[in-house]
Amino acid sequence: MPAESSTPNASTASPGAASHAPVGIFDSGLGGLSVLRAVRAQSPDEALLYVADSLYAPYGERDDDFIADRTLTIGEWLVKQGAKALVVACNTATAQSIALVREKLPIPLVGVEPGVKPAALQSRTRVAGVLATQVTLRSARFQALLARYAADCRFICQPGHGLVQAVERCDVGSAELRALLASYLQPMLEAGADTLVLGCTHYPFLDAAIRDIVGDRMALVDTSVAIARQLERVLEQHGLRAAPQAAGAPRPRFYSTDDGTHLRQLVATLLDVDAHVERVLIPSRRTAALASQPV
Ligand code: DGL
Image (cartoon, helix red, strand yellow):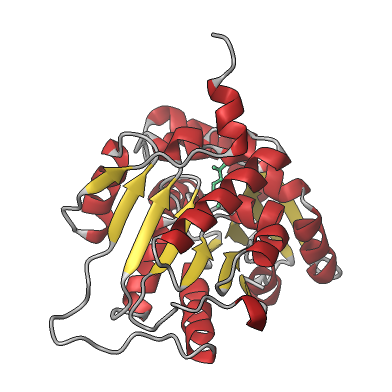
């Protein structure tokens, strides 16, 4: 299942939630822009708030409590900004903390998970590769997903160490990055994999570099369009879809916990938007503890 969603407890539903309110989209960094792009294409009338927690990326190298702390705190921050729904556009945060966040936030949630199901449905060789963070791969959610679809399809799961860091630097094609990708993909090709699940929202930015390595021997599974459709369904179910506006589509608003230079750069390349990125401080229990550590 590429996207999953939850319904808030009716008794805690946000009283101020209205269809004209924005949708919050959050990722550990820049990866969720691949989801934001799909959401804009699917639901052009929605106002969007995007938060990149780039100061603390990659989450894939963090412990479980840190990821849950950041996901919940940023979700709460977006609720305070008036978000009517939240897309956790991060496989790692979804795998690790969606259950907790779902319990605590009073708005509908859409999470993401690696496209194991579509890969199992489309692989002809019955061998598929999965690239995702270590945290996603070892999570109980992912293991359960794999168990559901691995009966007649072999999945070769590879942690993508270093890939999120490359995208965060806006490196999507250096020689070092290509060598790293080749070291992950070559064993999959040798095992006969014909399908590759991009199990992290940062990885769609590497599609050209991946394509150069695998040619047409592998189909790439990116779930961003499925997530955008799921969000539309969830908004519809809750009566929260924005009506078309005479002034045209609202411009998304972008926030970053670092200086936002790379977010701005990727937004310009990907969305062709000269965006203003606002730097935000979103302190949480674990980052306060980091700040108080002696250097
Ligand atoms: N985009 C995040 C994901 O989908 C990256 C996680 C990380 O920061 O390591 O998992």
